[in-house]
Image (cartoon, rainbow, N blue to C red; front, side, top):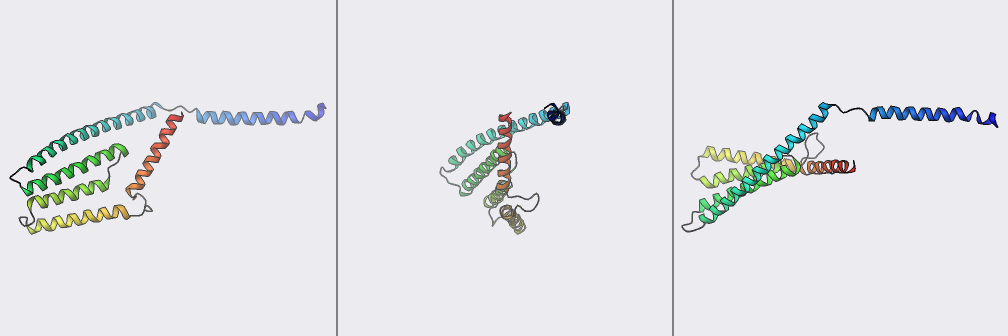
Length: 194
């Protein structure tokens, strides 16, 4: 009986030793200390992102207040005598402010600038200038430049939607938003899990 058990003891002992050496090896990798540089860098980045979010929130509040004042001015311009150019200019300017507000909200939610919204703001701004000045009062070179500008913005708006995500670095905005949301959810679950 003693002879039959003697070969098993060294094998068990070797298994325990190899398992313990693997545990020690993995512990040394897991317990590597995080340097102060990495801790400070993460803290600095989080602080700067927080300050940037506070600045964007202040911009949102200021823009919203300005939109309320612009609505009041628009209703006052509707009183007789009615000036068509002033009313359309106020309405288009209010639409530009709404789009800028939406751009800031998207930035707060996703920490990126929406190309589509920025292009839409540029298109409405160019159209507002043409309507306010009047096409007949504007020189032909300015009308031609505005048309070329609107054509380029229209192409950019079209390409933003229809470009496939197969090219590296070029994704439609919806794919970028989905990726950001999934990453934010995974980070949230990791911080809640630990």
